[in-house]
Amino acid sequence: QVQLVESGGGLVQAGGSLRLSCSGSGSILAISAMGWYRQAPGKQRELVATITSGGSTNYLDSVKGRFTISRDNAKVYLQMNSLKPEDTAVYYCNAAFILTNLQRGDYWGQGTQVTVSV
Image (tube, rainbow, N blue to C red):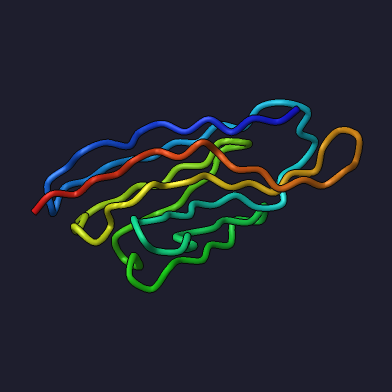
């Protein structure tokens, strides 16, 4: 079994910063990629940032220059600076792992609420 546990969400004023963390545990042999998605009320879930096993990153255009994704083994972080009210959403950690039984799996965290007030 594999689990992703997130932390770090909360309420912050516009212009402030938050750091999200996500830790993977279980029968993980290797990591293909990890990332963060978000879903605002009434909207579809969207990709915020991803990082591959080789360290390549990809960002949603609206967060470029403000958010930074990083990874340390099976932990992934999202440093969010200069937050805007439109960043308000539930943020989900996602990971593509290769398990010790050599199967590949795609996993989601439980989500953490980020609320940015004006």
